[in-house]
Length: 544
Image (cartoon, rainbow, N blue to C red; front, side, top):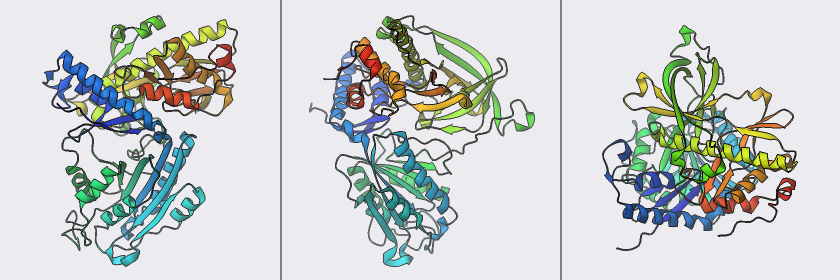
């Protein structure tokens, strides 16, 4: 049997592997589904053939080798080539101002959320054949913000004498752009109508592109260039086109080549990890809990089952078999908001309220709808947070024994809820649950990331030392990172949430665990400060 050859691409929150059958697999789902079951990706909820111990070991080795291959392109996640492809025909006129705001917001978020990113940005404007030779305009990749803003600001919507537009001509222009070797390539495409070829009536060119361009050819070029394609639709008229875009390339894959989402004015937080998260309207207002006239409009009541890990008694428990950690299960009624109030790179946040406990919560749901009925990703996140909480307690105990003055920081108590409601049946719906933080009491800060980002404010150096210490105290097997949370006014109390833990074993803390690549990324950008020196961490580096 010939050896499997894998191709890998990395985003800021995931690693995908292509196997010999030309199918893509996210490493986290590949490890969970492929190592436990054969056949359908839905096998954990149905009937599947259990793999033998030998098969599990063989697949584990292959996937770990594939993950290690990403070490050579670790820097890729810090070098991004971002191109916007926008339908600028007359039908887009009502939306063009909001689209411009969205574009600037996405670009600004990339730069603000990670000061290590090297972002080049390009813009392709397309219209339709009735405009003639000027139907496509291109701004090549540039890192000059003023040039990009001026170009986008001058864009107007005109042309288009039927519904469909010259989409394939726009995609051809995108593929002709000269980007940087080894960069992460992201395409954000915004449109209200599909390409020619009978997807919408009336169509002046129902047989397809007049220049002979085809959907399979365009998608093949996108795929060969490793472009991550995110499509934001203004109207539902583009649905059939997106299905056609994916038809030839996802029949055996675990995710679509083109991810589509409805665009809306992005008044929530958007991180670089999911550029396509322009969907779902946000509602910042707190619902009037218990008001009958608002039931079904702004809130609803649900019966939820709540699972919660008990805090490990020591780090020794964190290093051992995590399957032995104790867990409690309770059931109660929650009032749940109908719309999210905030959107991050991976999750959406909904307000919730317990009428029995008179307490406010935040319910976090993955934006990837395929995870809504799967409990494991939420349990993994909860496990990661409870282990990080024990590391944080031990670090502060040692620091204070040494007489160090450092901020007091702790992790939110995380739970996993199974929601029982008529619209979630027959499949269950899962989510993460945390107590709501009062954002008026402080400032939210991202101290470091899971792929090398480090906050430049030296006031938070003890948090960087915590990540460094976690690697040393665990004998170089764990690294707690992606530290983020609410800094109370005065700076001496911090509540953390949503950590990542890199671990030598890729089967632990799946999802955000970048293993050796994560170790390397952290120590590439981390500089030891006073706390590291006091704890004897200075000079600690990562080597394979």
